[in-house]
Length: 87
Image 1 (cartoon, rainbow, N blue to C red):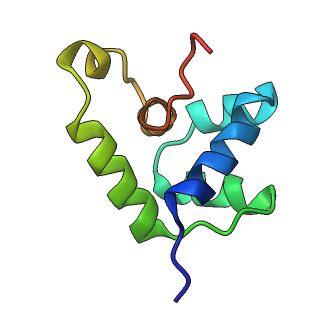
Image 2: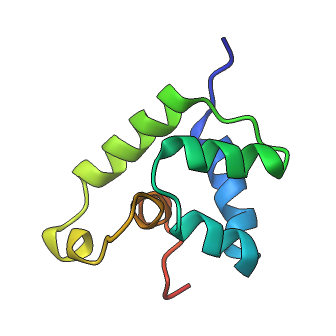
């Protein structure tokens, strides 16, 4: 089984940050499978376990203030890797 590295996730989110259409799809994601489908449709092969682990690790380090702004799974993922609405 192939695993995804933090660099793979950052590469995907870098592409997301530069593309409003992908960004909108990420923000609308309701779960990790949506994220994996979006990534796959853009040539990124991310693994579910690695995305969830990276997501959990990043959220565990977020402040309460930062977490208050998270409304969807997609928002949480975007926040975790530094691709926020303010970008």
